[in-house]
Image 1 (tube, rainbow, N blue to C red):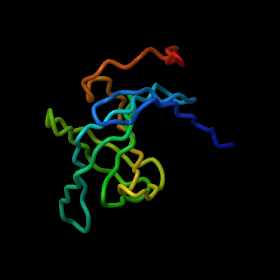
Image 2 (image 1 turned 90 degrees about the vertical axis):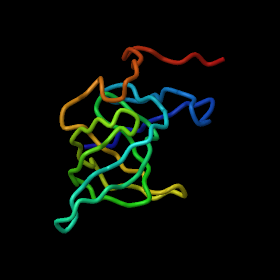
Image 3 (image 1 turned 60 degrees about the vertical axis):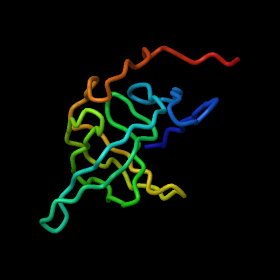
Image 4 (image 1 turned 30 degrees about the vertical axis):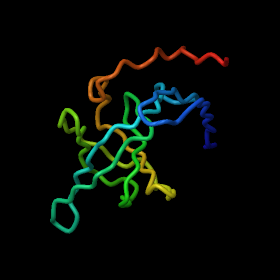
Length: 129
């Protein structure tokens, strides 16, 4: 099975601005920073990891956190603003970055309402100005 390349065209990555990532994915990704907490159990103890989103979609998000979680780890993500929680799993090995670990997570069930934003339609593409 070959890997699919993802291209991201962003004009700005300033905090609070929203941009859409292009590529072949199940649903459009929106580049937005949302404060979240990952809740997981490690050695029988409940742990809470503060984090934030790098990008979000209907199926999950790319999360940045100071702590690494292994691929296939199961936990819950909490939206700090709404305090809603939803079960997730880490889809593949996180990558290190200067800001922390980039952790790809997927909801157990797609949830259009968890992020409380309207996603662009699947056929939408940003204009190059």
